[in-house]
Image 1 (tube, rainbow, N blue to C red):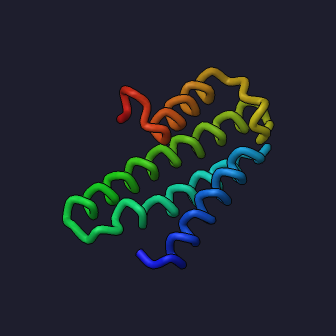
Image 2: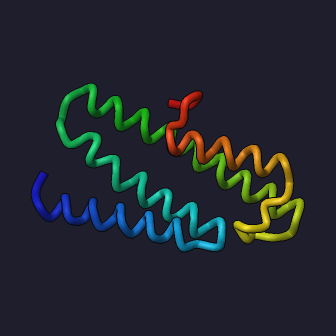
Length: 112
């Protein structure tokens, strides 16, 4: 991987992480997580081996499913509470879906 590609990947990782950490809105948090996902994919598949391509495809599909759950959780919370703010997570189903989505994105034990 050439130095410019490494620099762009590292910058994208830092940008996505800072957007996610500093966001107060669900959509901005989701955008930051997606930037991180798209920045990690070239790092996984940089060796052109079939297993690396398979791993990056599985990673992408898993992260896409978790992103869908995260958006569904935020939409459900907005439907029940009328708030799109991250700090106003009040409905139990939204809280459970958000916890599941973040656990999948982090690769915690039942989802690794």
